[in-house]
Image 1: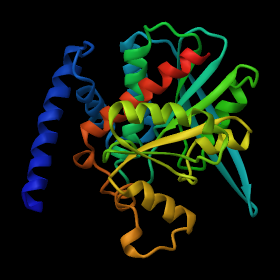
Image 2 (image 1 turned 180 degrees about the horizontal axis):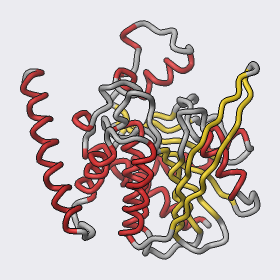
Image 3 (image 1 turned 120 degrees about the vertical axis):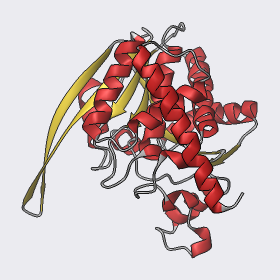
Length: 304
């Protein structure tokens, strides 16, 4: 299929999904669809929205799911070289389980300027929503805070505020960050040099069970896991990337972006650009991320 026909097909597929999601939303009921259908539906409804509109959508979806959540507005003031910068946002936190030990699943929902934000990070937000919807009624030995962080793009501000408000070190286990999981069939997990390396074995088991390639990166792009690392709390991040991009990302980050054109990750040509659209998001990639997270959380729960 040539590039034009591929584009036409993706546009047709997207129109079909929009009609299906619109019908589901108008009906006001929770879909009992294959998980990839609901995941992609979330991405469609998040795409192109402002951060505030995305927050409203997350809250509406959580209410329909019957899962309790809280909103935690914040205002942060930074002084940089004499300039005052005020950053306001609103984290949304849904909690499932009742155990004393607490696991955090994080996915930022804010968007980069001039980007529709389908993959970064509509994809991670979609996975977090379906984890809440589909896993909330299971028996958990721990409590899981599923956090929709705001203002990640401004320097991980929302996740820093969450730590200050909610983290009790004696109860805290780990934060697993889900960021950019909408393209490809290769897991990229890292940074492996940090404190989150204790759960790497669970990701390896999940990858083996699902028969997918996993790349363990010593480095990982800036994201909300960094807030937890700075606070000396265990954290790790997961992405789903096109084949070969795991190694390309590692090389790119290790060399601070100083690589030849053949070593630039394909992913970087899309995220933070106007091309970060749903036509390039793959339902199978979203499903893979959801399945990996489901396996990791269940097995982590068994250890607590």
